[in-house]
Length: 549
Image (cartoon, rainbow, N blue to C red; front, top):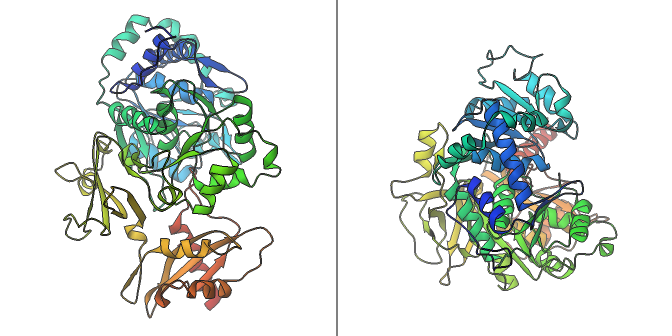
């Protein structure tokens, strides 16, 4: 197919073969753009092949787990495809991890290779790697039980003599032939595990989710199709690449439709807006907190966002006022809402580009093509009638292969018929729209009453002084739990917790009223922008305990 022919979106390809296909049919189209470097698809394929041969030269084997600890640097995307071409398993590492969490991940996935940048903000990754015995200067290599035998440094991390410089991979490529690389690539099947994503940690220690090329390429394709992506589209990519949202919905969602990636190395609201204006981006994804931050940038109106058309908001409920502002002020008339989880590659549902504001704020849309969804009773596991709340389950090509080295956890999440239990409370209406009301385990049980925290959050967010709100249960001797909330106010607002409780009284039943409200400046979050309710609960209970001393 010549480059001038219409591009046909692709699926059912190994990740490495996807880039090869793009280099053949869209060789001169821009694929990956940063202020300092620009790759066409042909150039990105050439670079990925070069690095793939370098990885083979240093001994990376098929099926080997390679942990990548970096922000959205150009090398991240190159490595995503280079590792796939040689059949290695890309293990994504949360950029906020410290030594304890890193130790857990490296032990659990049995990584043999780590690729890292120098660090992020005040965290020096090389110090953390030494603390867990990966680099000299900490515990003796192997004494910690970690299997890492080589570390590769990106950027100024390459200055450390204990690391193989990333540039050295390119230099070593000449020692491995193209024929050897082709043989390795040909042996990689579409259903082989190619990626391990660790669950985001909103509820505690993560698990390694094993995903195949079919899982993630086809899921990216389906989500891209819902946004009507074409090679003319350009994505301002500000979601962390270590997260499924970034490396699947972002990278593979665009590439299966021939679009271009314009990444921001780490989320800074103004940097995203500048990228949109400079590159004339048509697509931007994010969690609600990211869109709120962009809208709150001083002099937001001086940034040119007129090129934008669509995108995905996911990771947390989107209040209707925020969606209206995103559509109107950010020039995103086709903004969509998606729902999913890492174990589902990640997308399960999405709203249509022309759905109403109500559907785009009160639902997460309908199931993607070739994806089954149902609601079951959490206790009996039997399906419930339409419009009845229960636990959402899903089945299809997108469901993970399982949790790495955790057969019991895999059996608990996946039944014999292939249904994945999401742990989310939801309902499906007669038109197929799914309404997710929160985690089953986030239900607040007070005096025998089951309370959905999302009802309280919607109510609190309706107050004009409230910017955002999250509700949860805190321990109570009499009631078991009582309703609490952490509320962030708009700048200059001074309303207190008691007044907010009174505001809710006219809307919520008395047993649902938030009895203890903390006014906060920000929320504890994962690096992908999800609020960690378990930490909110812990902080609140510590504060309550201190007040009673």
